[in-house]
Amino acid sequence: MKCALVCALVVCLALTACGGQATPDPAEVARLVDQAVKATIAAMPTLQPETVEVEKIVKETVFVEKPVEVTVIVERPVEVTVIKEMIITPAATKRLAEGAELGQPVLARGVGSNNRPIDITDTFSDFEDIIYCVVLADRIDAGTTFWARWIYKGEPFEDTPVITAEQDYSDTYIEFHIEPRDFGVLKSGAYACRIYVNGNPQQTVQFRVQ
Image (spheres, one colour):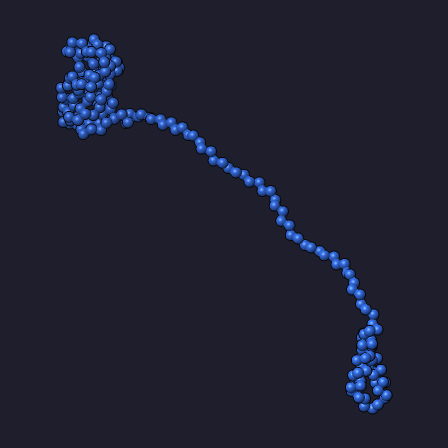
């Protein structure tokens, strides 16, 4: 606003200086205006720089690490003891053979009706009259043959006569025996009786004489 008033005043002064001529000389007007402007600028107060305090607001984003609870599962090797239990059932002791199905043979000092074993044992004295080997047959087909081999310390010493089934049988006992007096006196030691069905070895039972 002040600058506009100063400029208007300068123009008026220039026109007055021209002596009120109807058509002022442009060169003279320009010279007078230039002098007036310079004089005006020189008369104006000098502006001093001002120091302005500016409050600086700094915004900072701070990341705070929050403690995290971590559960660690450590797998420890575990020693496992496995106990295998063998369950023996009557079916597990049976042997299927061509012409017969036999159970596990036993040794006995005697036999009863239908050759059922009496006084079952696996130890005999050297003065026994008879030693029996008896086996239960669930099935016997007609024409099947049986015989037993008696063994002392791994060596056979007696074969029983061959028995031939004249018909089909089921749930019946078959017995084989030796009479120690036929050999004088049986020696002390380990013995076995092996049963053959149709000429093939099927079941073996161990016993001792002492």
